[in-house]
Image 1 (cartoon, rainbow over the protein chains, first blue to last red):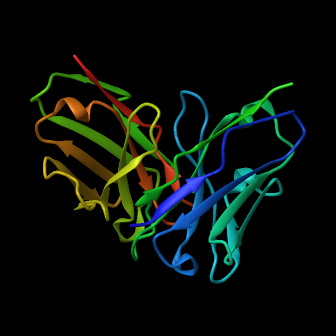
Image 2 (spheres, chains in turn orange, red):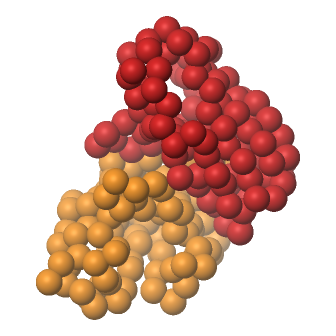
Length: 119
Length: 107
């Protein structure tokens, strides 16, 4: 059973950057695809991007192009999501999520990380 | 990018009743790459259905999915108290997109 454990809540100033981690256990990290999804307060789910650690290739949703960087450290089985030029609208819970099998939907989810952007 | 529109926004039902949730796509969803998730307050989403109609591991058989192309449906045959939650559809052909959600509330 795969477990995804995320870093803790964070508060950031507008214009700064945030980096959230997602540590995987219970499987072979290189075989995962790690996705990032966010949810603003009271709102729906928004897919941000993903990384395939074995290839080191990341894909990003158009809304985040240029502000989002997703990386992975295979030695620690940890994926990272870094969002820059933060604004108040980026206040949200950020989730990492991963498929289990061939279907690229999200069987496994991290517990979520609340990022608050406030001056 | 495929836009998913869910209806209704809120469904008010009593335990034991049948729930029918709709998800319509702006263009055809390839290979039935359509999933449904349940989310309860303060929790991460949980995968219910993938491939439009296959139940994920451990999901009770009162949950069923159907549809193809642009029209998909999640049916909960008899609502249990723990089923009152928000439900999202997702298409997982790149880029992945979600519907805006349907809240199933107790009437």
